[in-house]
Image 1: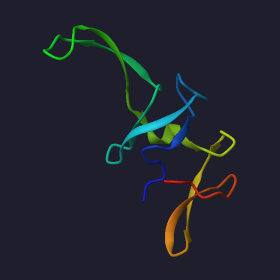
Image 2: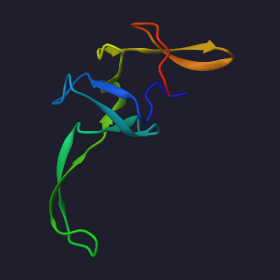
Image 3: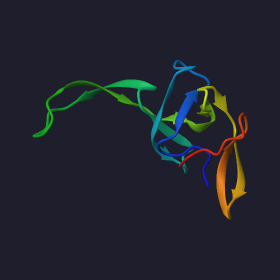
Length: 102
């Protein structure tokens, strides 16, 4: 089970976007990286195709999982632990003790 999953609200711990929050849109567990909406934006030159016109587009680049932390109920970063509730393994926020949905 992964500590950070698609749909989680996360806080960026280091880098140019330090302190910003966003939603995880894709996780790549084999590379230990994730894409976060609105975080680590880069510019890409787009060649014209039948469906898209040419130009410079902004898109998210991946960010390493070690630079992300799950946002707690109050919006601050928290570590993630695991526990068994009702026979199921669930993720638990270490800061507040709340079960993380998902």
